[in-house]
Image (cartoon, rainbow, N blue to C red):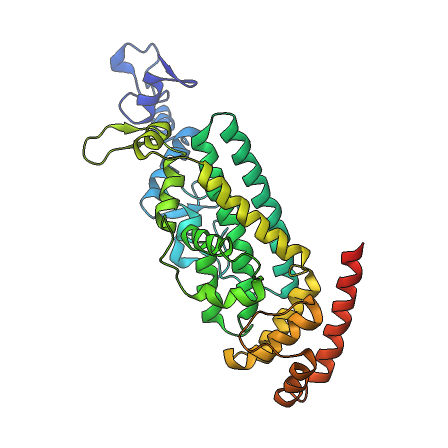
Length: 367
């Protein structure tokens, strides 16, 4: 009987349960046996273990938190492999080899991420919109093909991917030199629940644009019909077979959907609202790289919420060519004069730059 290309007796011999090929076999009817002291010395020296045994020993050591070798088949120890020993930002400190089995680098090692510049944020938003739309279309197609479980998982992922758009815009509120705020932002960026929540907040705000909405992403909205955490759990249940904790019965995705009466029509309608909301912002120029940069500069000038109101009105009036719909709306000339009083050093340059950007966007929208 063979395991792969290794016969079982050979495998046992390699583990020390059978005499090795060079060991003395005189007592087992071997014709040759050991007939000299030189032969005894030569045959008793341990031969290098074959590759599969070296690999087995390697995995045994790494599972016990030992050292990661310099090569996948070597036995020479390299530097110690552990999540705590990795330098900040390094995920391949095991010298180019694959990490040991049983270790999840994505969980145990979180690289230190840098603050995002406005151009990186604009590029990320564009990619997220494309990815989210692909997930949405795939979910709708699978739903109409009768694969409702996978369709629902993809639709929930689409909400999360659209939620990244709002969360990336939220990053424009952060000061570049604030590691603690950026650390918290990145932690939330990797949270499926937060991205789901932000995406569903976006789908409920109709004509409101992201520059005014992003400041509310710091707060939690408890009024969703299905909590974001529950929706994330549904997504997992739509993809994988699990077992009931009490009965031990297997629960397949289709069985889970039948048991909980899950229907996709309402979710599809909600995602369509989210698609329209993102398209509305895109047509208004909110995601244009220069507009993203302008919004970032606005927040650099005025971090305090009270001081941002007139700057936001100026941003909307000069660039987006629309009112903010805030209480106490003023004519644009009055807003500009108020900004000059509040920010005398930046106001004139800001008004000139934003006026020029608004004219360019209006020209592009006509094309």
